[in-house]
Amino acid sequence: MDRLLFGDNQFFGVNHMSEEKARAQAMRFQDLDAVMAVLDAAYDEGIHTFMCTTHERVAEIVEVVRSQPERYAGFTFYPCMPYAHKYANAVTDYGMLGALRRFLPDDGLVATAFKGGRAVARKDVESMITMLIDAEMSMFRGVPTPVVFLQNVVVDLLLGLGFDEAFAVFAHHVRDKYGAEPGYITMNLVPLLDVLDRVGIENPIVCSNMNKLEFRMSGGADGYRAVLEERQFRAIAMSVFASGALSPQEAFGWVAEFPAIESVVFGASTAAHIHSTREIADQVWPRAAVPGRS
Image (tube, rainbow, N blue to C red; front, top):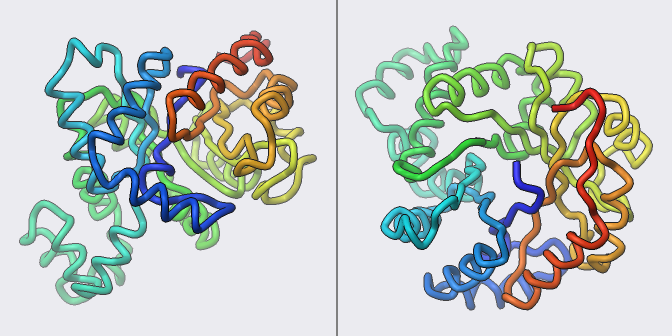
């Protein structure tokens, strides 16, 4: 994985500290050209991995990248699914079954799966999970997707329900059908690692909040420090700036204390911000080998 991954929160009006800023960003990035200008700036800084949701507008970005292979040589997508708001809105508009019919590719199969409540009664959910993955991945045809993530809204729900097998279903499907590595985004890092161990997912890719201020770090810093020092997994840190409360120097200085953190995902709205972030990361977060880790 690349050390710096570029996220998409700023494009779709997500800001954990300021609703006003989130609204302003959402308005600014209604225009695809504005989005591509920022992605071009990241690409030109050597940041070639875009860790993105499966928001409908991401399909437009994929189309631009797919249509200009020379301009975007080496550009890589890390899809993160599902985009929860998309499904929530569809359930509101069409109902639960109508929403599934809207997103799944084969209406006849959906009807069969739900006939007589069989999907619930028999817990026959594996086919439903794989169909939903395929529906979400359809927009990424023709572009590299070496890692595919399950979003924290689903990961943490599955953890709470104790539906551990779903993590293995996800892993097997993205490996077998897409030749990709499964990734998991979570707000509950330590419990998730325990579950992934139990279902046999070795050295998993896990993205979680990690920062000096313990911002949105469920369970506190001690648990995170312990797993970063002792457990075998490929860590991606998000929210390293604690939603703007930390400077890049402070944020990457803290990250540098943990060689097990392989990558940091961050968002930015301007070329200048991207450039300064990349420069500071290069200065204060030198690459270090971690014994026993791949």
